[in-house]
Length: 101
Image 1 (cartoon, rainbow, N blue to C red):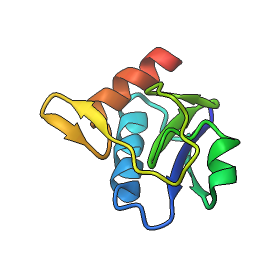
Image 2 (image 1 turned 90 degrees about the vertical axis):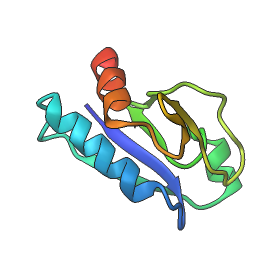
Image 3 (image 1 turned 180 degrees about the vertical axis):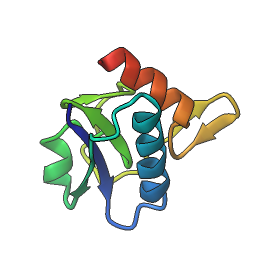
């Protein structure tokens, strides 16, 4: 399994997204699967990837929370039980990873 976290430079949510992804993977027993940080530097890079805004979490190249790809260096918002947030919760990630595998 390959887990990528696509983000833009200075995204305030990258570290939390990485922590949540790591916690979800660990709780599912995927302790040996790294979370690869991939910085999107340009609009061309955004347009040529599955970038849905920063941060986007992919498993084997598929967005865990499908959305229309963006073609700009934009932030992303996720719906959660407590409203909108800049990252998915650990519970949401655990469910999405479980469904993806």
